[in-house]
Length: 259
Image (cartoon, rainbow, N blue to C red; front, top):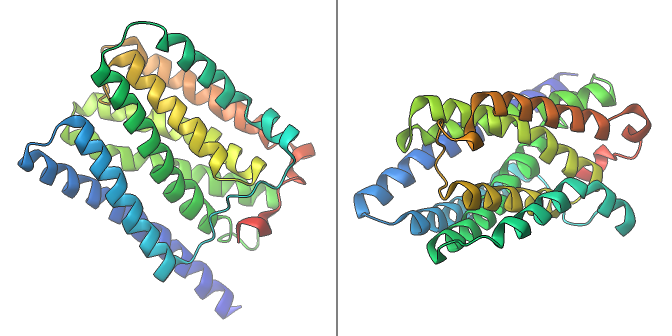
């Protein structure tokens, strides 16, 4: 029992350290990029590549949390699970028909790919994976919901580092927006078994936001980032997650796959 409790405590510390580290690195990297006078696209590319390399190394040498690429369901079920991604992709293709500057298109691609790969690797691959092993005495349903909720909140908090580039009110809206989409991204990972599915959805989502708004920075005055829309988004994504995690589908999630 003592070993088990110590192991669980160790996992909590791992999650806490990863969260504090990513928050601090985001601020440090952004401050350095500003001092160097780097443009927005270069900032995003350098930031996401650096962070991915750092946390991949941390996982390899310290955390040792498997991040699964292979799906646990067949191709047909993967497609059904990926419906939210497909809808966003269709919307992305639709708005791409509208005129966009070359700068905006490149920024959408860099932002989408960068955030989609790194943020999913850290928050779904590592942090969610660790949390799934951190509630040994809970039922499967409670373990999943606790892990998904905590990892989604931490995902939102990490976006608080954006206060350096935008207003506090805009940052708060972005934090709640990230928390809400965290539920859906977690559901996509757990139900498909492959980190690639949430990576693709996340990339498409962020690219869509950039194409719609023309920037990676939140603007509280725009319809895209209105507080009311954010609350609606949170409710919608939590409801979708509840549908993904309904009792009849919980048995399809093999928690050992993520250990």
